[in-house]
Image (tube, rainbow, N blue to C red; front, side, top):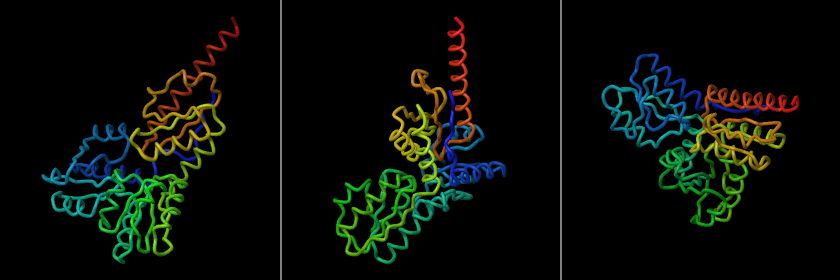
Length: 292
């Protein structure tokens, strides 16, 4: 059984940057508190907790000389201001791709334009972006929700950074019927998301089973699962090697592996090792059966 890794997988630049910033603060002796989970990976969060990082849920919990960290998804300007007023130090680990969306929305709103965000309105990244243009921004999940929009003035259409490109383009096209001028459409899906989806898609049609390693609550991991499932019916989203079901591998000769942007290399290595071990066990069993 061959285990094949997609060409692009695992930590994206923004997540790697956030983790490095936290580890740098720890090395400097800071008492580190992240406002919400730093990234969407339970296992990596647990590793950081073992090193002394704790999570807080509100800015008022940042008192007492702590270094507070804004997670990769970002926050609203109001939350950032409050955090800075309470913590001894604030590290802004917002992903630069997310910062781009925030600034685009803010600039458009200052010019009196409407902003349409395509993505999950409950996702922390989207909540943060809305905070930069709260009176001018409308959030839609997909093209079907564009019908619910009011008349729009010179709208800017941008995306959650982890959205599927096809879903964004369909939604952007649907916004035209609500606009008083041709919408300005800016593709703000991060390159890491696109690269991982393209690499997974390229591999999925050539394997018998596909494992996506990532958090069950991770937007980009869920999108990777959807991309893989389009070409490989036996596609599975798992968080740890313990979730691999041997029955799912019955008859599989080639197994693909990718990982979400918040999945650390050490966890990917554990899954790959487990799959290769299962393949070796199956080969040994088949060899014994052939001899007998």
